[in-house]
Each structure stands twice: as C-alpha cells, then as structure tokens.
Length: 399
Ligand SMILES: Cc1ncc(COP(=O)(O)O)c(C=O)c1O
Image 1 (tube, rainbow, N blue to C red):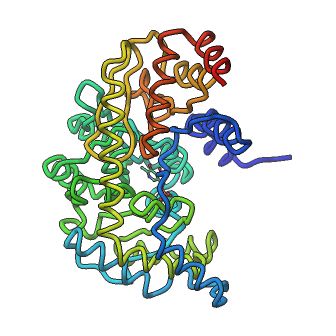
Image 2 (image 1 turned 120 degrees about the vertical axis):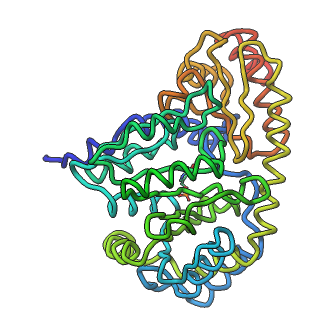
C-alpha cells in the first residue's frame, strides 16, 4: 500500500539511535541484569504530593475531555512561572498545554515553517530535532557547536547560514547532550540576528530547572513577538511519563498551535493537569532536589571515569548527561555503544545520534542511583581492560 513522503522524512538517523536503548529497556523489563544510562529519565520518583493529587482527581472522576489548549488554571500557573523566571509579561492566552516538550516542538515546527523553508538548529542537538523540524517539509540547516570549542555555538557560522529561506532557529539551553547553557552574550547575538532577519526563536527549555541555581538567560522578554518558549515537568520534577508540557509565545502563534492541538491531542487528561498544578506550586523545592541529585552524580561519574585510559569525560555545565570522548579507545561512538552493551549490558547513547560534532563520543545519563552508576563505571573499565569478548565472559562467570 501507498505511504506518504512524510513517513520517510520522519524515519531519520534519530530514530535509529534508539535501537540499542530499546533493546536494553526490553531486556531490563524481562528482569535481565542491564544498566540503562541511555535516556534522560531521572531514577528518582515524582514528588508524592503530585502523585496523590492525580490519584485523588482520578477517583473524583476527572476522566473526561478537557479544553484543547489546557485548563485555564494551569495555563495561568505556567504563565506566572514563566513571567517570574524570564520577566516576560505573559498571561494564559500566551500558553498552550501540550503532551511534553516533544509535542510542543512538533507543534512549533508545524506553525513556523513549511516546504521550501529552512530551519536552523545547533549541532549537537536532541536526536528527534531533525525529524521534528523536517516533518513540516522545511529543510534543517546545522550550525556547528565544535567539540574543540566546548560545544559552544559558532555564531559566525550561524550568521553565514541564515538565508532568505530561513524561518526559525531551534535551540535547547541547557543543551542535550552537551549541557552547555547559552550565555547572555551568545543569546544577545542570536537575538540580534533573529531581529534583523525576522526569524522565530524556538527556545527549548526542558532542562531550565537544571541550570545552575535554576537560573539562565532568556530572550523572551526582549523579543516577545519572536521567542517561543517550550518546557515541561519531565526533567525538573522527574515526571517524564506524565507527558505534561507547554508552549509559550505570541497570541497569534498560540491560536494556530491550538488548531493543531485540536486535531492532534484534543486536551491533556484533566487529572494530569491538576497534578501539574501541584507540581508547579512546589517547583523551587522540586527543582533544587533534582539539581542536587544531578550535581552529586555528575561529580561521581567524573571521578570514576577521569583516569580511565582512552576516555575523556566532558563535564557539563548543567543537566543530567555527560559526553565522553571515546576516540582514544579506537572505537567509534556507535561501536563503543554496541560493544559495551553486548559485552557488559550497559546501555549508553552513541554521540553520533546527536549530530556530526559528537561523532566519536558517547552520552551517559547520570541521573540514577549511586550504586548503579558505580557499577556501570566498573563494567566500562572491565570492557576497556579486557576487550569486549573477555569482558562479557567475566561478567557472566561472575553471575
Ligand atoms: C532537548 C530536549 N527537548 C525535548 C525533550 C522531550 O522532553 P519531554 O519529556 O518534555 O517531551 C527532551 C527529552 O529528553 C530533550 O532532551
């Protein structure tokens, strides 16, 4: 049977990147001895008051359709939190509630570009970006964030790549996978270019709560007609599976986003929205809990890997991931990921999944308990000391 051109566009390298990860999670779910450090899903639980509220609302029968753009109280709460963080004057009309930042990226992409257009993003980037941007029919243009410059954006490269077809710049700060937080001056340059060329700025702030001190610069107040801020409770509150996120932008854009949400989502479940209100009310404590958790694990991972021959860990400024340069081991990132998984049952992510600048790297999520992280590092050492085949044998022999 016939399939649309879209299904081809959407099945890019980003989708392949998840194969080892899904194998690992399936093996773990079968009860096998597998360590999964390939996804940004904190191992800590969602705060109890949030869970309690969801259960209470479920029992109260809050199981019906909800308004497509989200309940007013939640939109107001998201607007208040955003205004307090960025100083941008926004209200509920600037907010739409969506199923996570991923869903918001998809909606933003469909609203701001189409066939014949170009959309810029910074390489390395989250693996879904290419398909999410190109689903609209636009072409994605990659701006370098070179490894040798600490994965900071090459802004001269950005200026050179803007063309009359460019419609938008998508960026995540803190970045996944590098953990780079865009500085005030980098954002100012990006903002000036966007202003000069009339471009949308799609600011993915899913890791905003994990920025140092929970604070990071934003262009939202300076360019309210051009900046679209996306976020969710996934990382800040250990709520990845709740799928509660939002898009904040000019009213006209939110109006169009609502039309897309009407035919794509038709409202997030009410009990999730009510629980999200509780989550937002406790954001400062929840965010500092996850920041402290990540900070401790980051130090632990760094200490455990920094003297391993062939590895060069790159400590992040923020977030829950560490890029590790594995070129010194003679493996490519993909080979390292695959061989490590096959011999030691530790799943990390191939850096190449995030773009060209991270080929030869792997990304390790360190948002897990200490014992698991230390055991993963022990297995990585065994893998490198003994070679893939022997290491696997030793692990199995040890039971
Ligand atoms: C940069 C980036 N954007 C978006 C997402 C999706 O997040 P959400 O769970 O809010 O959909 C992720 C998830 O890891 C991410 O790393």
